[in-house]
Length: 201
Image (cartoon, rainbow, N blue to C red; front, side, top):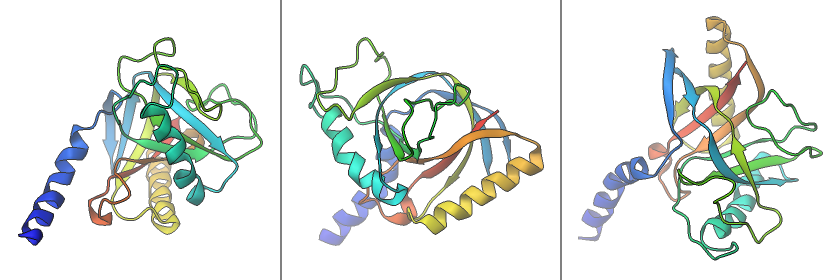
């Protein structure tokens, strides 16, 4: 009986992940394993940590989860959305990069997407000063999707594949790559949805 329930739960997990809200986008072009997506504006809660990418996600998650689960002024609870993104924070602000943030001396930026309908004016104010709210502008991203672990080798392999496909297609990009994760850490590695985004110039 326990094995049956476990199998049923595992089978349902992909369906549950599709039910989680994501930012609106439309696919404007596909080639190889790449999609060019036009994203509408959306609001994120973010933290910038002085930590390498492999550590930043686990350090940032409880900070950002605390915010959406009620650690904010008004103690409002927000729905969990996807994806959770992370990228290297630039040393200086680049006004042409879709992922803009306050200038920091390096580090890693981790973002939670907030539910649709929230704006900077209506989103609850964070209590933790490390959490900042930001409006992400409309932007076009080149995206490759893959499954498997969150290892550096898996990430690097697919980032190389994405860059090679873009170079062959003559698509120029800018800024740092963004790792987008759509599943909880307990999701089996072979059922995970991972993506790498590069901003199209």
